[in-house]
Every structure is written in structure tokens, then in C-alpha cells.
Image: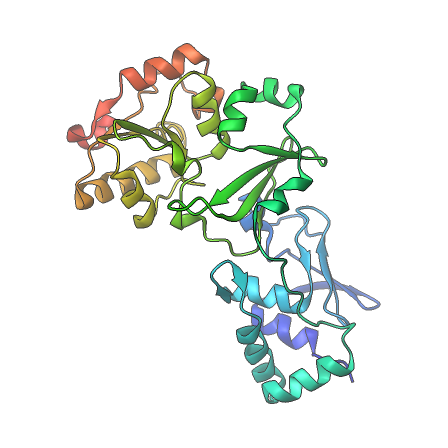
Length: 320
């Protein structure tokens, strides 16, 4: 008898098996959209029906059956997977008690025993290096700006973007962004980016400039402008809005709403949130450039867009 019926668990998770080859089963990757922003249309995610070990050869999503259930079901304690909740969920599927499941795992630890994350602190960042010159040039970034935002580099051609507590600057984790592919990973799984801002320490009393991507915040600093912060996406949470209240004015430079639907939706939501919380905001002026975000712009265009930002009193006309 296997420790856990992997097929039964996948069925409960809503994962449809496309093909079986021995113990290996192929399906659409359940973690693909979270990591890449796109649904998995060319499946290359395999899971072993005996052990529960899984791997997506496209986006890199991998782990054991417990981490899979935790991520898909959203079982977290702070930034870590809540393995107790996962065990209870799986025990219900198996129609046994959590104690009986624990006994099975103890007898066969090579199967799907939970893997605990290492404690999160700044020592974890010692594995990484400063970004190489070619990578900085490709994004229009300066080494000084990267050091200010603590941007690092992994040997797999990947940017390392720290995620920190906005109040005491302790490390919660980091986001990995591949330099050539649309590939994102969060470390640890479930780190709550919506409770902070990338570059929160750069929020100034006078002005903050809000973008979606962390590297766009670094791009703004590379153009000689202070106050750049990123929301890790187009949707700005209420916690992030409250952090921005420290600035007299927030320049909203989410992806160009004239060409990007997500950027437009984000601007709409920000406008409503700003009104609710009494935030004074202006919207970055993309004019007729047709460019998607500040990362595609020259320094002069970034400075012009900030200086000519349009006041929120004009409503949606301020960004459309």
C-alpha cells in the first residue's frame, strides 16, 4: 500500500491526468499561472503516482505531494506552508485520522514527508551575487540603484528581488525573475507580497512613484529619481495603499492603461482606493508613446512622464 493515494488527491485538487507512463503521470501544471502569469497550454508537468514527487519542465514548479496541496489549496502560516492543515486535508481524502497518516509517513519517509523551509534571514542572500554588467545594461539599470534596492543575481541568469517587512526591514523572502523568460518564483512558497512594497524603505514624505515590477522601481532610481516602489503586480492591496499614505503625493505609474488591460484595471482600483483612504495621487503621463511601462523608456521620457503626471481629480481621464 502506498502512503497516500496520489490519484485521489489530484482528483480532489481538480488536476486532470492527460497521460500515464509507468508511475509518471502528465497534466497541466497547477502552479504555472502563478509563476509565469499564463495558463499552461503545453503541459510538461509530471507527478509520480507512487511517491507524489512532481516537476514542471517548463516553469520549474516542483516539490512533493504535501507542498503541492499546500500551494494549490492556499494552506499557509504567515509565509510558510501549513503542513498541519495539509495533513488534515489529505487524511480526510484517505478517510483516516491525521494520527494514522503520521504513522504511515513515519514508516515510509521517502514518500511524501513534509519538507520544512529553512529559517528566513539575510544569511540566505549570501548565495547570490551582484548583477553582471550585461544584465544591468539590458534593463537600463545602474549598479548603484541595484545596491540601493538590494537587487541580487543568481547563476541561472535570474534576478533576486528581496521581499521585506515594510516596518522593520526584516527579510520575508524574495522573488526570482528570469532575465530572458517570463518566469517568476516566490521564495518561500506563499510569501505575502501584498503586505509590503518592493523598496518600501524608499517611500519619501514628499513623493512616491508606484510601479508594478520591482525592476521598474530600480529603473526609476537609475534615471535619478527617488521614491520608486513596486506593488509586485497591477493590483494594489489595501495594506500597500496604507503604506503609500506616508507620501504627500503618489505618482501612479502602473503599466500603461492605454495599451495594457491589467494596468487599466489596476489604475481604476487604485483610484477608488485612494479616494477611500484620502491619498493624493497623480497618474504617470504616458502621452502617446504607446510604451507598456517605464522599463521601456529612456530617462528623458521617465522624467517627463513624472513631471507631467495628471491629477486624480480628473478621474479616469487622468490615465486614459
